[in-house]
Amino acid sequence: MISNIGNPAHKHMNILVIGNEVNRVEIAKKFGTQHTYNFAESLTELTPIQEAEVVFDFISETAPDTLKVYEQISASVFLDTTLSSLSEIIAEADLKKLIFGFCGLPTFVSRDLLEVCINNESDEVTLNEVCRMLNTKYSLVKDQIGFITPRIICMIINEAYFTVEEGTATREDIDLAMKLGTNYPFGPFEWAGKIGRQNVVNVLDTVHRVSNDVRYEVCPLLRTESSD
Image 1 (cartoon, one colour):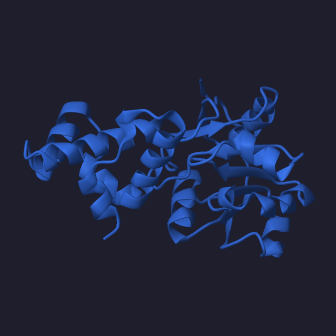
Image 2 (cartoon, rainbow, N blue to C red; image 1 turned 180 degrees about the vertical axis):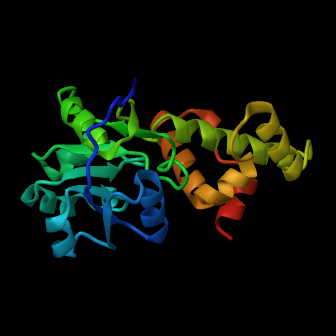
């Protein structure tokens, strides 16, 4: 479901980004110069966490035991759950605080639509209000590993690698054909470079593990290049 934020009551927000420099730059690009941005590499840096009104956490899905710190603050928290289930993280960490899941892969954050998931239907009321203040539209999707758009894009990238591996077409021809034929912002190989090939492999491997769907089996050429 896509929510349109009409006549938003957006305001200046203190946004904390927990992750790396790529994450910080993309969040700032997404939400604009009207907000204040702070940056931390981990949840151990308590001062910026306590001062934040909104947190975008790109790293803590792999360490749910650290998430208890969020129950000590009032900020709205978005956790990158591209490779994990939001509901499972909440259950494992025994969290009582409302936390949203979002797709934090490079290039997916700064899109017009923020792809998000929630743990309970009632959480959308708060999600809608936070997104209104941030002046962003959001796409509410099922809480599932890989979300929707990353699954599709990563599968397209994977198929493009198979096509090159088979000698059917060159990378340049495939990138040009996809941009001209589908109006994609990037060709599959260009997009793989921006997302990060290892990130693409991680999405495909994780979805394949939970679904056992052969469509997500990683092309050997892509796996090799992801480890270079």
